[in-house]
Length: 466
Ligand SMILES: *Cc1c(COP(=O)(O)O)cnc(C)c1O
Image (cartoon, rainbow, N blue to C red; front, side, top):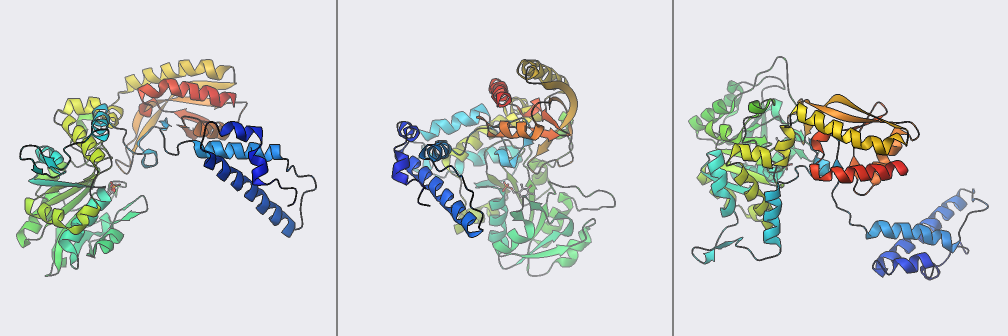
């Protein structure tokens, strides 16, 4: 312990002196303290276990080098862009949907200037941030009214809390969804103050099951889109239209949690069917909720559309303020929704849709071009490069069984272990996320943004050099 250099002594080491010119001193001090502390702890531990190594290097130079690495790690921004070569289009861990250029520009335009976020320019009076979105959402969905909150989990929570706190909500046992662990219908329900009434079975639920559950305590009929799983085989579920009619006949609101939020007809693009927002509204659902950053391809948001009276009650809920969206979200969502006014434009301009609708021919061409450029980097390092057919995933809890045909660039390293190369890519700057399958690294051109291709090649060159 006595040989362990003091923090002040280490701070005088040249390597740390140099660093203090390019980063705040407190970062360096914290890194040195952490390094000394971790040495002290491991020495203590080793001593307690009676296996203190004889010749451990406690020189100031060595500790200073370790502290310098730690300081450099601390000085780097933590959140930053990554290159998603995994082929999963909506990756929740990778920030879900990359935004359209229009949405990015909208965020920029309101971030370094004042804006009319809650200012009605016509009247000169206080306005609503929701006003920038409501007209568009009503136009696209056919609903009477709309309100936007922080995310879809918040939307479901707020709907249930507003219309069903202290009362019962009827849900099919086949639709008790869990999304990513922290959103589970039964838990959201109880947090909102509503009581869950399960009806039917896992595979079959009929209209009569909902009917039998109705009583004077029933406040809503809830349909949840099974967005991240399918029940197949011997199954029966109640259509949105039937549930909405039942609700109307007994004067109880029918609510649908759609999950993703699709305005486009997926069959036009050879994708499996997914319920559209406007269809749920047309079917008579009184409230419909969906995410902004799944298949909608916009910013994180939870969108609620439906009947004016119910949306009004939701807006007046005190919790709506706690769950409200900021101006960046409003800006990005408005710009994204505007693109949907022209379906072809939406598909061309919204990255998620560009990726989902990329044709096999285009993907083959891009895979071949990428492979060609990677060969120059990889050949000398003993890494085989090949283009093979494969499939991409939608991800983000949407279209769980869809396998989109694609072409992959497969890298077959011989001098370095495949997991080690995967790790080097992941720890690079920018980080590159790839798939590892049967000892090969697979890169899917579908999710590689065109403007990141150059960076990808450079990142791979660095990773190969080690
Ligand atoms: C994704 C999803 C949610 C949660 O949405 P977030 O926007 O991630 O909060 C809720 N319900 C369903 C059915 C979903 O698919």
